[in-house]
Image (cartoon, rainbow, N blue to C red; front, side):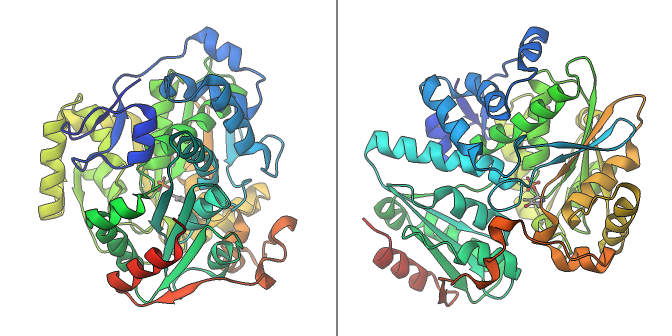
Length: 464
Ligand SMILES: *Cc1c(COP(=O)(O)O)cnc(C)c1O
């Protein structure tokens, strides 16, 4: 299997090279050249398999010769062995033909673990084979940083440097990053905003001499391998609930469009999907787009669901590429216009294709709290603000006769205890393995919002 860029100009890559590249050189995102399709018999054979084995079988056709099949199988099995639920991604029924898929049983309590735990192992395997060292650099507003640190800690040949905006991530989120004692983990608290951190990371990648010398790499949410690992839980949930003989509506709290795009991929693989429901907070660029056909940037406002506080959903470009029938020049044209003017609009025909599959619902903070409270009363479940938006969005448009609803719970409520307490009067406890998080020693370096300072820190600290 080969991968092409959504903007049509970068070289085609193998799975392994697309894994390491992240973003394509023409600014596009990598997508597979063609889509394998599982037959009814394939889905039948998935019945009753362990979660990790379903991930392995979903990934296998996409990986090609980049990893030996036995190696892939072993790395996948290892990735989920430490999760705190035997089902890894358990389903909980909340109503008639309505289910919640819990994706917070990994080490950092958010769904990002489901992809990053595997990515850390895939990267380490490639580095060992090539005899190279690599330095992963990323900016985080919370969940990605801790999930990446947990995934890459103690891996030989790898260092990880995570920049977070000083004083602007929650205490649980900060401590999940700064209390990891591993020598290859470096936390930088930057005197600035999340955007400043992201700009510093971009500037490091644009400094080619520095980038090559440190062998920089990124594991942000546009990495194809992350999407693919996430597709597996859609397939696993579908199979557990009767696929391919039933049709599904998946509801997904959405920021960068990575998670819900993984659901769209599951549909391409043959999972019967009726609708994909996008749940947004007040940063509702996608919901406005689905209503109007125009993608229009707006300033980011802080909300109770900070992991969805984003202005541009980068993974949407992958859907555009499919809607434009693989015409990279058209996608490049739209994205250039978007960057220049903050807006693009699609034709009626293109919108009709998207509207057939996607619906959007928006919840401001008041509606989010009402959803947490209402769902607690209705089902006894205590949901975090992101998950509550997903479930409430799903319930808004679900018809139990037409499809089975699966709403994705993307974070454990203890990650966002204040919002949950404000809505329900319940303060959710951290799972036992994290119970001492608030007293563990922290390790973090505070730096000014200055490229030179960050680069000299990395030059001096990262082991070569
Ligand atoms: C990252 C994140 C999201 C958004 O996911 P995308 O793939 O960016 O759409 C939603 N909820 C939580 C808890 C997250 O950490």
